[in-house]
Every structure is written in C-alpha cells, then in structure tokens.
Length: 212
Image (cartoon, rainbow, N blue to C red; front, side):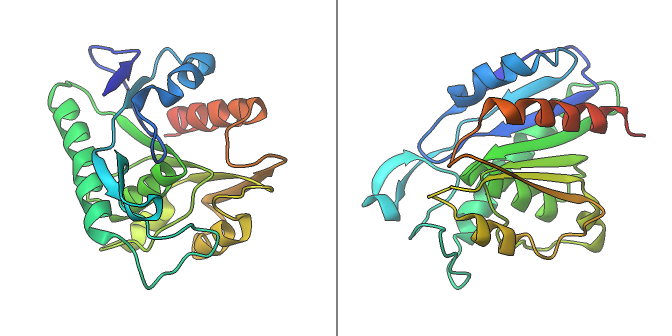
C-alpha cells in the first residue's frame, strides 16, 4: 500500500484503486502531477489471485473475471471477490478514520477493474462516500445499495476507442444513475489515462472538497 501526502489530520482522503495486473505504484506519478497537497491519497494493492480469463495466471486483481467486458454478462459476477475487496477497502478507511480527530471527506478513484470496485464499494458499502471517479471502468451490479447511495457525485471517463471495456457496454452499465449526480465524459483514447483528463480529475476533486 502506498500513501501520498500523509497528514496528521487530513480533511480529504482519496482511495485510488489500480487496474487488473497492476499495483499501488501504477498511479503514483499521476497523483504527483495533480499536485493536490492538501489531500491524502491511499493507493492499496489488490490481492494476488488466479484470473480465469488469463488462463488462471496469478496476478493482482480485485475480483475474478471470466471474460472480457466488451459485452458484460450480468449472469456472472464475482460477488465474493467484489465483497472481499470492498471489505479490504472499508478496513483501510476505518483504520485511518480511527486515527483522526476531525471529520473527513472520502473519495474513491479507480481505473478499469479498480473503477468497477470503486463504484461497487461506493454504492454497496455502509461507509458514506463523497464522490467517485471511474476511469475506463463500468458499474457492476451493486449489493445492498440504498436509495441515498444514488446521490453520490460520480465522474465516469471513458475512451471512445477502448478495446478492453467497450464504451457502449460501459454506458449501458451506468444507465440507472441520476443525471443530476452522474457525469459521463468521453475522450479520443483507448483503455488508458491521458493528460487531458488530469485537469478534469483535479477539478472534480477540488469541487468535492469545496462542497458543503
């Protein structure tokens, strides 16, 4: 696990979740470029697990995947993996909150599989989150979600030429989100994060910080 801008009593905590096969260092440079020194960033590592679509090879993954998500099969979802990883994230947040003397805003950011976990956690967890950023991700079927969970501000950013998670598949998975709180932005890119997204990410995070 990587912690950036560690502070005694941060007012904002961002949990940033990497994609399949990556690790906590994957977005270290991106966080540095954002230059948001008043925000504490925690970048956890997914556990090592065999991934079915990659011939069972052991790699870091938040949950198992049986096939690509160009066409999401909602008949199969690794609920156990998602719930286990959600509890892992909840544990990190709960432990950090215990160390603080002040109220804190909590934001989830994730890329690809990490984005899916971010949305799943944001809408299924009992922890109250203040915002979610989904980078090249999609929305899994949530579990135990409550009506108020629909009011979390979400910024979803996706490449028009994404060959891992097809843009129309992603768009379909987000269909139940309220337009008042959900913003879907597209870019001339593939399954990646590009420089032109960074200002949007920065502005979203600052907007959550300033919102009372």
